[in-house]
Image (cartoon, rainbow, N blue to C red; front, side, top):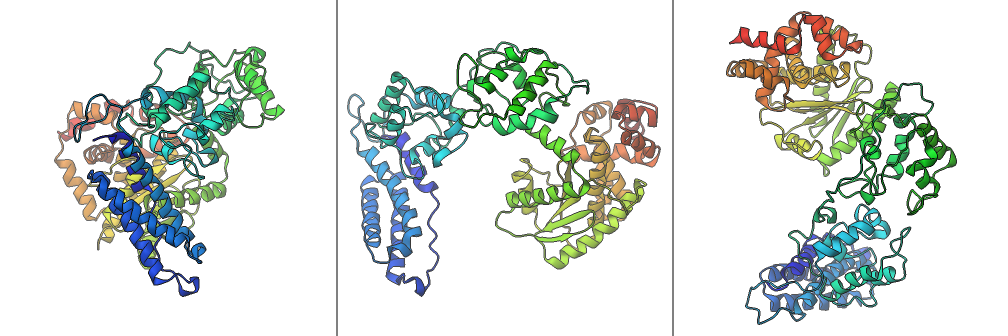
Length: 619
C-alpha cells in the first residue's frame, strides 16, 4: 500500500467528481456520432483507471489514463470543440486528478530499506494532521474552511488537493512557484490578518515538497474535526443579567441579528476563531483567547466595542474583511453595555440565529408568516425529495404538498378540511378563524420510503416503523407528514385529526408543554374526532400490551414520546384527561400559565400525581 494515503485522496477526488452530462447532442450542434463515442470511451477509461488503481494495477491504470488523454486531446483539437466544452471540461478535470495520483505514486519512496509489496509507506515531511491542518484552521478557517471564498475550499484535505475554480493551487512535490505559496509569501493571504511567519510558510512548503501526504483516517473529514479542540480553560466572563424590559436597547431584539449576520461565520462551529464562539449569548459572555468581551456599564473598556471601532490594542478591526458596522449600530452596542449588558432572551444557550428567527416570526402577521412557511415547505420538500416536483393544493388554513396524483391530493384536502373542523370543535374553536398563526403544511407521501426519507433528511432522525404521521410546530415553522393509508379512509381521518390536534396543542402551549401531553393529547383528540378507524383500534390494542407501573410514570414524564411505546403510553394517560376538565387546562395555557400550574388548577394535582393515579387505575 505504498503512498496509500495520498492515493486514496486523489482517487476519491476522481470518483467524487460529477460525471459530465453525456446527453445526446442534436445535429444542429454538429457533434458527430464518432465524437460521442470518443467521449464515452474517455469516460469509461477514467472509470477503469479508478478501478485499476484501487486494485493496485498501476500499469493498467497508467495505460487507461494515457488513453483518456489521447482521446481528449483529439477532441479538444477538433473544430467544433466549443460544442463539446461542457463534456470536455468535466473529463479533463477527472483526468488531471488521475494524473496527480499517478505522479504521487511514481515519486520514489524516502523510507529506509526496501519496501515490500503492499507494505505501507512511512510518511515523510511534516504531518498534515498534527502540523499543517492546525495551522490552516487557525489562519484560514473563516474564508476557506467554513466558506469557499474565491472558489477555493480547504474544508477537507480532499478539497484542498482539488484546488480552486481556476485549478490546483500546488502540485505535490513542488512548492516553489505554486499559487498557494505565492499568496502566502507575498502576504496576500490571509487577508485582513498578519501574514504567516517564515516558519509557518516553511512548514507548508516542506509538506508540499515531501509529497503533500495525508496521514489521517478520512481525507474527506472537515479539517476542524481533525484538529483536537483546545481544552484549556478560558477565563470566565461576566455573569448573566436578565433584562427588565426598561432598557432602551435589548440584545435579542436590537443586536443579535447583527451578530448573526457579521460574526458567527468566523466565530462559530467546533473551532471558532480565537476560541470565541458567538453562536449563543452564553458564548458571547464567555469571551475567547483575548478575555471577556464585555465590561457591564463601561462600553469604552469593553473589547467588543474596541474591536468594532478598531481601537483594540491587538488584532484587526471587526468584522474581518468586511466594511465597519455603521456608527448607529456600534452606538447601540455601547448603549446596551452602558445599561448593563442584560439578556432579553429565554435561554442564553439557544442559538442566536434561532432566537432571531423566532422574534421575527412572532412579529409577523398571519399572512406574512403563512408566506414564510410556504417557502420553508418548498425547501423541506427539496431536502427530502430533490428529484420530484410535488403536487400542491392550497386551502385557507393549510397547504398540501405530496408525491401523489393531483386527484388523490384533492381527496386528502377534502378529508383534511372535514377533520380540521372536527378538531376545532373538540377545542371549542371557530373553524372560520385561523386556528394556527400562519398556515400549516401537510406533506403527503405515497410510500414509506419517502416518509422515512423526510425524517432522515429534514429532521435528522429515524421515524418509528409503526408511525404513519407526525408533526413539528414552532413559532417559525409548522408542518405535518402523513403516510397515505391504502384503501383506508377512516385511518386517514384519524391521522389528519392527530396532526391537527398536535399542532394546536404545541401552539396553545407555546411549545412548552411536555411531549407526553402533546403527543398523547393529539392521539386522544384524534380518536374522539374519528373513532371508527382501524388505526384507533390498533392504538387501543397496543396500549393493552403495555405495563403500567410507577416507573412507567417516571419514564413518561421525562420522555420525548419519540417511540411508539412511549406514544401509546402518552395516549393512555391523556384519554381520561381529555374527557374531563381539559378545556379548563387549555384556558390556563392560553392565558400563559405554566404547564405544571395549569395542571394543578385544572386537575387539582401536579402532573406526576395525576399520571400515577392513571397508572394505578389501569394495572
